[in-house]
Length: 318
Image (cartoon, rainbow, N blue to C red):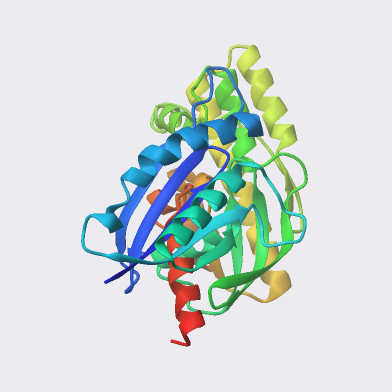
């Protein structure tokens, strides 16, 4: 059976995935990039170097070469978003590795984007939306965007209709987490800390400003930092951060859906792993919400592998 290989080299994760000709997942390998304690991220040059180191090991784990499958096509995230001028050096590592793999195997290479990789993995994992047009909420370390999304085969037309006006939801989480001394990226650690406040304390009150489908997180980030400096309870502040994000997202998702006349909402990106945000939105929004499994919200290459499959089918007229 044919195998379809995907690569994604994002700002914080090196990923290689393989699906078969039926779209079933064969392998999903990831390795996080290392950020020094107290750091808020990596320079692009540091990310490129770590991806080069990681890809050798991950590529050797490519199960398509050991389970009787034959490589049929390769795809990689070549840039962050499907718009002109979108570029980050880290993605060139995965793209060039994928091009070499395709050339050696004598199979087609297809370029995609990190955002479309998230979209395809989200659709695959969540089982929808079934409609060709829907609202996407992309929440990650560097992105908080509301997208009017139209699926066109293996590609997506996206138009930003809302999102952050300053820092992203992920940056809000990471900046507060780093101030608490947590490892970066801080999301899972801050969530675990928030668990300690659920039954013992109220979330610290943090308010974010919203206007229509736009949101701002810089104000509550400053407020949370000041509360920490004044000796505020870390667990209550952590819970307050997620409560603030969830309530703000609820308002802007409502506004965007009303503006566009849409009901179906796909949520993707690492911040969507957070259970407090998920539970709040599921309890308070009347829209049709599609959450991927947490494993496929965070950075991965499953979407790229599925895009390789879909584009290969289109090329063959299947």
